[in-house]
Length: 233
Image (cartoon, rainbow, N blue to C red; front, side):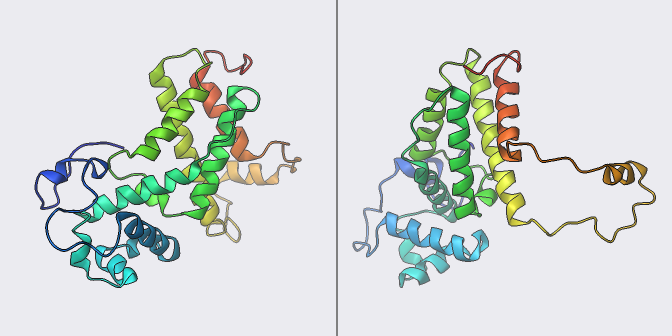
């Protein structure tokens, strides 16, 4: 994510992250709702109907107020999406205590991320948009870096590994949400000999570790260890 300024028709506030600005404007009557209430209503709407359903008007309706009143707190829908994303990331707290080596700890964090994406499927849709990084997102990165302190590699490699782990988490969550929508069943594979050969091979027992764990382990060791075969201590 980026802190690059976005233009949404406002003034200087559009060039500042939402977290650095006052919770509400200084002019006009005292608003009836807090920023926290607005974000909570927006998240509930996104959980129930998807991110496309989240508009300033829809959130205002859920709160029983007019859309114009929300602009006393926010200058755009982008502000709202930034706050929603950071609030969701805040649900990852409290971070699990380290158990064993750094790789095991990162797997615990990845599983917690996966559970978060299952609760809020719309996080996949906000992960690709340019936005500011909020305090809870920064705290998450900081905690991951704490876990990775024993790993001897460049800080840039650690940042890349954390970002890639998050990407893997979102892809697994997305795959779970759409499972069953794609199948080779009923298709004529005659013209595809390699697929025919693959499907004709006898099935083998599934590995003891699940695919998610194997993927995260392979990703982190491949990116962070000069020799992926060395111990992850």
